[in-house]
Image (cartoon, rainbow over all chains, first blue to last red; front, top):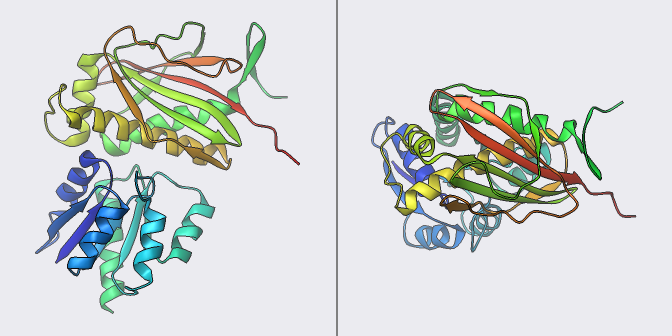
Amino acid sequence: MKILLVDDSRTMRNIQKKILGDISGAEFAEAGDGVEALAQFAGQKFDLALVDWNMPNMDGLTMVTRLRQSDKTTPLIMCTTEAEKARVIEAIKAGVNNYVVKPFTPESLTEKVKLTLSKAAA
Amino acid sequence: MEATIEQPKSTINVKLIVPFINSVRSVFSKMLNTTATVERPAVKSVPVPQYDVSAIIGFSGEIAGSVVVSFPKATAIKVVAAFAGMEVDPDGPDFADAIGELTNMIAGGAKKDLGVSAGITCPSVILGSGHVIARLRDVPCLAIPCNSALGAFCIEVSIKQVPATA
């Protein structure tokens, strides 16, 4: 299972890798902003992507909007400090499948990822 | 009637401060698996942060100003190790990255509880003692001393509500 971690903080990507490393067969790719993420999507298929909202060069919402023009199916989880209800609705309208607010516990992140993957497989 | 802390020429609305206290507690509990406690806040008049590792995030929109989270270097090293799950070289880029991301979470959590429409900047991290933070001139700054098992640190909140324009 290939998971793309999109976050401008390398520390956050490492934390996510450590937590999600327990998922059987998980392999990780990383992107530091939306531009890098779209370049990765152009060359390969992912089973899941975690996407931060606030990033330099291209933010996560723009990245999701652009990706959804050509890829309607890859499960996307917005993982961000943006916690207001209006933001969550905005992200869902753009095409994310689920939403994780930072800070998160390892259990809550794992649960959201598993739930999103099982819904996508159904 | 809203509680306020008096300062010459201006006042600080306590309602703007409590969300930062709640947010730092939440971030320390969820991401560092430890407890942060808060001591009595005090108005701060000098622009030099309390300690020598500081991260600053700016707010714009229905609130304006900034929050600074400031750590002694020894505390910052322990905080980053707990956050990243490993020792991180304090002279390397990952150290500033980790401090910035923690501060980003504190600011983001507070923004939600403030219930305002506002944008936050990407964090800037400053290393070294005696650095000066330039803040909005008309906004007072409240220093909130914090403690944790990883050491003491301080949050400096300097924000104001921006009146809605017609």
